[in-house]
Structures are given as C-alpha cells and as structure tokens.
Image (cartoon, rainbow, N blue to C red):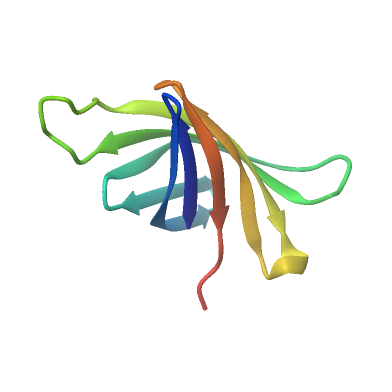
Length: 111
C-alpha cells in the first residue's frame, strides 16, 4: 500500500501493509506502517452508481507509534476507495483526517 500525505504545507509518501478481511458479518482493514497502525471503525461496501465499480467507505483510527513529547495521539480518518479490476485489482482513493491532513491511498494486491 502506498500512502501519499499532505499536512501543514508538507507532503510525502510512505509504504504500508494493509490486510483486508471479509466475513459474513462485515469487512475490516488493518494498516501497518513504520510510523503507525490503524484499525477499522466502520466499512460500508457499495457499488458506484455510475461505473458499477465496487467501493469501500472506510472510516478508521490511526495509532501513531511515536511516543516522543511532540507526538500526536490517536486520530480518525475517512476514505472512499474504488476497486479498479481492469488494473489488476487496485483499490484507491482520497482520504482526510481529524489532524487536518489529507492524501491518497493506493492498495495493490500481492500474489
């Protein structure tokens, strides 16, 4: 997974590992990077009315791993991710967080 971010006039990118689980009762996604972990609060699956692509409305909590004096505590985020099957199953979309950051997620399925 690649996460492109913008916060306080700065931007960058970070690689992360995402694990998506689906059961009879719902969908969840965990994301782990060098600097943080995230956990699902709510996932809603729908089909885009224009393109018929599967979509995830994804709400999550980020738990930073930094414990220094300038570290931020946990915060929440939201994203709408679309599945691009013709590109090999890429899932991507924009996100924003309660820490006034925003960016772009792109998830590629590993074989």
